[in-house]
Length: 321
Image (tube, rainbow, N blue to C red; front, side, top):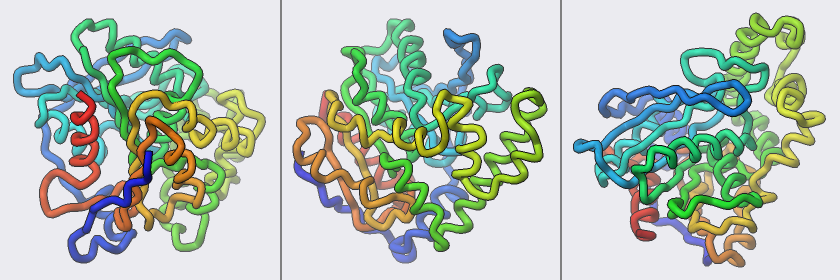
């Protein structure tokens, strides 16, 4: 598909990438009915907490599955904003909290990572077992967008109910994106992620003291250190480099066989050059790449309650019906 330039023009200060990124992530208020939580049991003995946001009549046959980003969860403004946008168009929304990202630490030593598409597949099996949904869409943000693109492009049979997907601010080149976020201009962001993830590991060390040492966690001074210490090894990779190489969605984009829209802003300081896969999209029958000039990282702010990426996601999915 030809690359879509994007028509997003932000108001005022939000042409600045940091202003849009920070405002959308921390200051935006999204009012929706309280999520209804459900716990589903996984095949390996662990669990996922998922949160449902229903339409007014609760009997919609359309479902959108939402995947959050690094150190995120279902209550983030970008998750609630997308749920509301789809609810208003009579889509039920279910927000997936990755392992260890809800209010309770998961049971197993492993948790989640950018390539944990098997957990998404198990969630898909669960929602299909409800026998209610005839059309299913998926939306992933940041790390969740990488997981989604990997899921779509892997050598697996996708359910016929899946009509399409949208990825927002997708770091599909994990190694390159890590290099981008480690630049000095992103120091505040990377340090915030680092502190959040280290606290998560301290909690995990209390549960698994024989596998994770607090001193080793304290010695981590970067996201890569954390991925070397825990993320890679806990999930079957040799080290951080092996994890980035094998889990990057860039390896799977050519295998996507459902209509998919990737929205990556040109001024997103978290993304590397390879996160704008123009050649792959141009040669693909299914991958649409939209590159707005502005938007930062998941920061497509507008003057209305529905942000640009939410409007585009709903438009794209509904155009497939």
